[in-house]
Amino acid sequence: ISNPSAGRMPAQQWSTRLAFVLVAAGAAVGLGNIWKFPYIAGENGGGAFVLVYLACIAVLGLPLLMAEVLIGRRGQQNPVNSMAALAQEAGASPLWKNVGRLGVLTGFLLLSFYVVVAGWALAYIPLTASGVFAQLQPAEIGQQFDAHLHNPWVLIGWGTLVLVLTLGIVGRGVRSGLEKAANLLMPLLFLFLVILVGFAASSGHFAQAAAFMFSPDFSKLSASGILLALGHAFFTLSIGGGAMMVYGSYLPKSVSIVRTSILIAILDTAAALLAGMAIFPIVFAHGLEPAGGPGLIFVTLPIAFGQMPFGTLFGTLFFVMLSVAALTSAFSLIEPAIAWLTEKRGMSRLKACLLGGGGIWLLSLGTVFSFNIGADWTLAGKTFFEALDYLTSGWMLPLGALCMALFTAWVMKPEHTAEELGARKGVLRIWLRLMRYLVPVIILVIFLQAVGVIAL
Ligand code: PHE
Ligand code: NA
Image (cartoon, rainbow, N blue to C red):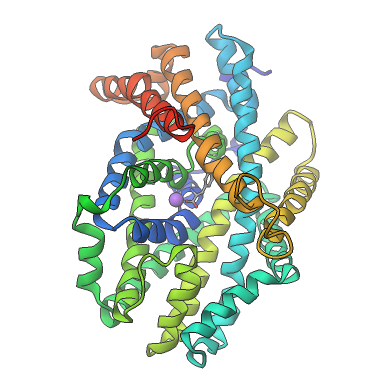
């Protein structure tokens, strides 16, 4: 383990503060914002869910994001070595490096199904562009999606393409791969999102969508909806999986973690809200169901696109945007493993990509088959895909987040966390209180509820 204060070479650092904000926003803004957020908000009654989600981001997600970036930046290495180095600095048990291992593993498992869903998005670009949705009946559009899921070869093909694109960028390294891609893709992503909101505003039921998303009716929100909002706050900010830790390790010491984290959280939240305002006006204008579930954007939306003027054009743009969002998050899911394989195992970046990518590809077959030939290979009623999603988002990310909160607040010296965060005393005090008490207690409550010890 090298000295944490030694730091990385400049070529292994983001070149500017903005570059970090874009790369980290790229990690954060993903399928979570555009695919998952609208449908879970739709299923949980809209406004009240959105309000709880916003509160969870501000009170829990944001300070946790700061904690994770802080560990990476102080450790200056991959998540495993960073945790080991900081534990040593604090005179704590070397076992803390398992938190880094957990992060690497979580990213790896998440990516194995993320590439499959991202593959749906990619596949829907040419499909939408072909104009086929204008010719199909709503029921046939649903069948189209089912047929897509039922063919393992098709899913393998598109998932492999996503993985190859991901490795092609990540393999080029921190500056010429990750940073360059984010500089190009993130402005485009937000531009497309704004264009799509404009399209929805001009051709959909915008006021009804705004009322659905922003006027809270708490009678529609259940306890499980609250927990879902909480878990999603972690998932959407990419907290607990080592992604923000490894990106933080490439962050120059001169950049403020507090300020950049706030920006990243704002961008991620804006992306989710914009996605909702691009999707729901169209859903309402066509009398479709906002609680459309995971198929909301692959079935409900194409039905609407098929019926509207310029629907083919804007529908295609929508799936391009979704693919871009998914890709920049995929980079961040594999980077912890790549950094670990190169720094700890001494592999070249190319070799690490081939090995890591190969493993993810194999594991992704499990998700692929869970939609077709393996649809009835279930564990506790969950398919392989559902089990993996539940394990990673429901357990591994919150567990990683819990460990990071405990580590930064109780193990690291307050002088050291203050030095990294570089914020005003009042801000530091609030952050430390949240990390010490509120965040761990709330995560523990989620766990106890999940195992049925307490019922909310
Ligand atoms: N934040 C990403 C999304 O919203 C998912 C993600 C989770 C990415 C954890 C990296 C780490 O889609
Ligand atoms: Na997100």
